[in-house]
Image (cartoon, rainbow, N blue to C red; front, side, top):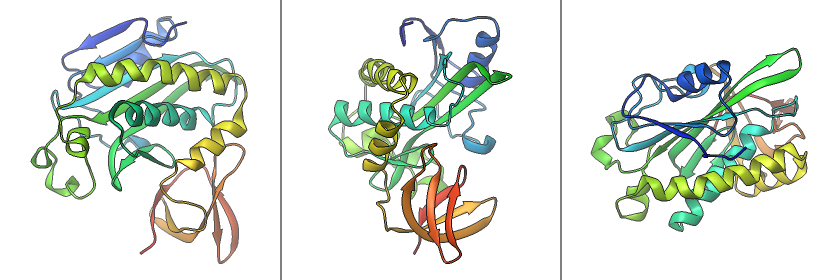
Length: 246
């Protein structure tokens, strides 16, 4: 298995994850990558639409066939890989915001989506979808996103070559994927927390299906759940939207 050993490129498609899923069901090998210049129906967490402008971003899906049955830490490991690739390629300070956002200057530069299929307790495949804002100018974003989104071009002041980030991405994914497969869970959790946007003790909000729960961030559990110290006690979340409490 070689991550990025086979790359299938599309100028436009509905969703790279959809194509990757179809290929996975057809027996496509682990490490195969789907890249698109444009997604017409890109999606993020909970099926939310992901803004995918033509040729301005990076839209990638990677086929994995993990041998571990518990995939709860795989999104965190893949987030670490993507963060490292960006930070080391462009010398930028990049943070992770649980569960799957990549943040620069407190604005979202990218995100991940992991989708998987099981036969009993055995994973048949996992698909890592990765979207990254590359060459957007501020006016390229919809008005409602301009205060929340950023591109690598805006962050580092230069045009971004997609191949530069891809060439860094494959070895980083390979490294952290092996860490995950080897069961080095504590390393994944500890490193994720080191690069998390909010440090321990920060007052945050967790939006859980429209219900906001306030508390102090207190790290992550062994299975990657976010721990929140609330007025009602210690709670763990496996899903939710996290923001700073104002």
